[in-house]
Image (tube, rainbow, N blue to C red; front, side, top):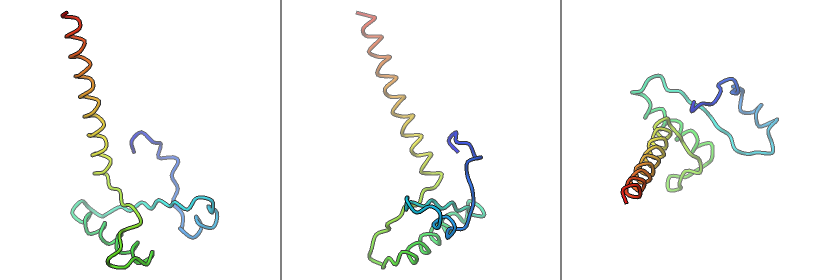
Length: 100
């Protein structure tokens, strides 16, 4: 994913992880839906489960984040769009400078 080696990932029970990893409270949980059509239902189910585990009431905001591949694609598109605009600006300045 995004150029990272998949050899550095491991799957283990959350209780085992928390038992040995006490200095950093951040936990990343990877969830995979069955197909693209059930993705929204899967996200909502995970949100409901996490809200229940964290005892969040109906009016309270989520104190966790859910990241999908669409989030990474949006970040990539914004990044490359910005680079594209800067490149065009540099090229335009170079052409104006060279034409003077």
